Length: 164
Ligand SMILES: [Zn+2]
Ligand SMILES: [Zn+2]
Image (cartoon, rainbow, N blue to C red; front, side):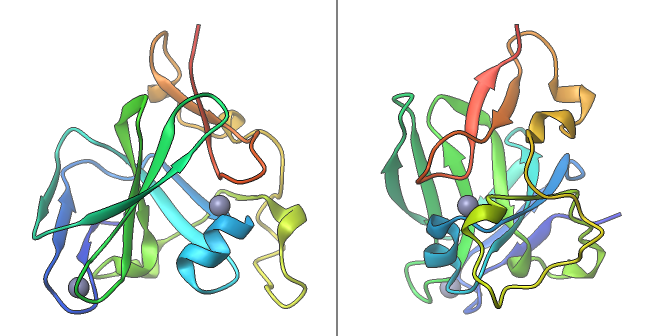
């Protein structure tokens, strides 16, 4: 089981999730390419509850079509991307797998925004691409009022919505 515990490159920021990851994804959208500096972002989703952070994390904001804002958190000292939050859905954190202390157990369940992938960014062909990530989102979160994600925006990875 992947333990969601890690920090930035310089060590100023540390984080730990009390819960196991609920979803694991590779996102090849342009926004993730820019924010990661490589061809895709590798992330696991964990509940905000029990997610502890020490050290200063700075966020830059990106507006979404739904009126929400996605905030991408990074260490202001070394610039390492750490985790994302979404304004209307504060119960989930999307953690960059490269910042984990032991990222070897990452098993992506889906590749999203594959249409924006760079031709040199090869990922495991066994992992399904595209589609609606809600189909793979764990049932734990698929309850009324709980968070799910759909992929809708050109500029953002995640479209959050509440299950009815
Ligand atoms: Zn740092
Ligand atoms: Zn993305």
